[in-house]
Amino acid sequence: MSGITARHALLNNIIWRGLAKAGFSATKEPAGLARSDGKCPDGVTLIPWEGGKCFAWDATVIDTLAESYRTRSAEAASAAAEIAG
Image 1 (cartoon, rainbow, N blue to C red):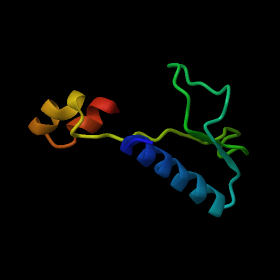
Image 2 (image 1 turned 180 degrees about the vertical axis):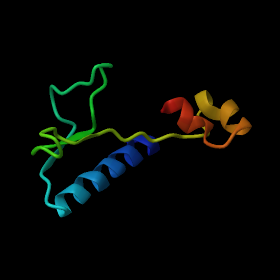
Image 3 (image 1 turned 120 degrees about the vertical axis):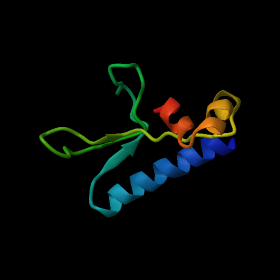
């Protein structure tokens, strides 16, 4: 598992465990659930969160030294996060 993949899995685990400790059943990487942009959330609560809707989360891990972010990261703080966001 690469560094970014490992950090992404760790972050998802932290969110999932936090929800479990708060008493909310949740599942990681649910099958068949996609957003309007075609992306799939990293997790979702199994019971409604608010207003009858489930809570879904998507974690993003940015490597500011990745070639695709390096130039912009050198120019401005948080540039990589803004590009990825």
